Amino acid sequence: MIISYDFGVNLNEYASRGTANFFPLLETCPNCNCLAHGNLHRNGYYWRYGIAEDVTVKIPICRFRCVVCKVSVSILPDFLIPYFQHTIHTILGRVHQLLQRKQACGGRQLLRFHLKRYLKNIHWIHCYFVDKGPVFGMSNEIKKEATKYMKMILDFGESPFLRRSWGHLSKYFMAN
Ligand SMILES: [Zn+2]
Image 1: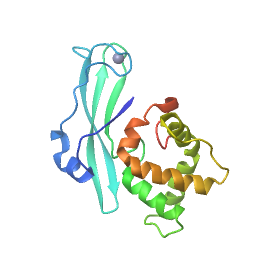
Image 2: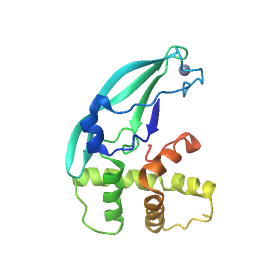
Image 3: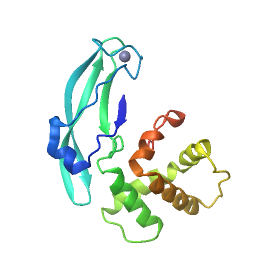
Image 4: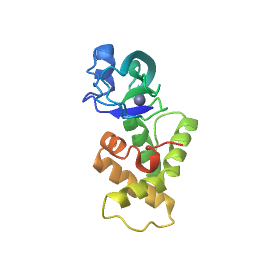
């Protein structure tokens, strides 16, 4: 399973710190809730790409393994969305451009993929904000709603939104 975590640094800083980042100590297993002490073992790192507009880097993702439930837990920095190589800032910046009918950086196919996935998530985003406060109906104009919620996410803060909405209806932002 994946945990979204705020390391307090951006992609560049995280990359330059590498395995010397301040990785969190878990008190309980996020899957079975057993006490982590003695049960949750560090299980090295896996390396993956992180891509922003100006940089592509390989970064370590810290892993734990629970001896009780056998689940593997990865600590994903909150500037990344699970299974996406580009940072959340890069993806949302580009999708925002597209929604405003502006030119966005990046390959056409990838842009289309990110936009489609975002639009597919609109109902889930809507439900999250309805849960949180003063949001009610939703019109059938999907592009209008998509723009409205993009602004709300940007106001909320991209990474805080990703972390706080994590697990809402057993999903996370931009999940398929
Ligand atoms: Zn466990």
